[in-house]
Image (tube, rainbow, N blue to C red; front, side, top):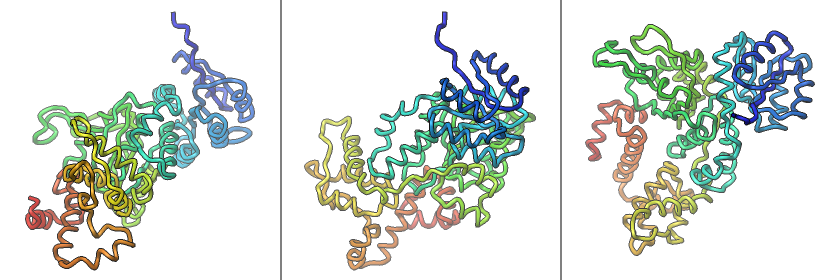
Length: 448
């Protein structure tokens, strides 16, 4: 016999019919409920009872649902709260998410959607349960990193879409994974996709799936990325690379929470949390009319900025130590160590490729060094990316401008190829080159 206590939901609404509907539906889910007709009654119940979820209407006789969300955030931050808004009040719902609401429902309440929301909210892990995992995977004790971990913990307790901004190589996908793994969808799929690496003619099929025979080569039914991420998280990396035609279809899928396969006749409902990222300035892309404003506002409910390595130079030593230990694991050799001058050289380097570049630099140096000590020369740092103080001295040492520029060109092309998993078409687009120009440069630099 199951003797565990039933979970308890607080319902806050001044309409008796809505309260009764919610009480009956939640009761059938084997959940206990208590109801309040206004902000004052809700505040009293919150003080005297312990709840696992709060459902509140937006408009209350003596206040607003937003005020209740803020009250709960301040006094009961572990309690998820979902807002019930009038149909079409998207701006109100977004404001609720920004204030800290877990999710929102629109009236008339869709009972299937209600049950999904409640089920997801009640799977919320205790805050800090994965704190040790985050500290181990998101290294660094600089103020920007401590703040980033705090924001991840908060955003994991929400279903709000998050736009993760930051430079290439700064760790945006890792941040997205941690938001997923700390939240109630942790046991469900996390599906990352590089939007710049998918050929435009295949995008609709990749995102929404296709039915057998819908086009040449479609020999069987295939689910898309949205279906693969159902009940989990879909991470759209380099979302700024989506063509405008695909942006329209993506917006509709997010709004309707449903997708239709290529060649399919019916839509299928999907329950997906969308996280996105790009190294480009998405707001500037909107201004330039390369990214839809309505999609931007739908994806950028909350922006989370990942700091560049230049902004947290104090973390370089602990990052380097961790990376060198990992490179030595599995061998009978001890980890190489950085000579003090090599460490100072790393701290004064600009790192345009951020943590990913640091990892590549150390992997090369780990192979080249002698006696398990990495000297400055083993690092082979690009002279053009020194800090201002050392950069002026280094510029005087450039004796062949063509060679210097060729090295810069090779570095940028290699970085673009690595970020697009060696998809030459996508890499060319990222560098604003035609495919023919890209092919010429690859041949000239010996990279083909």
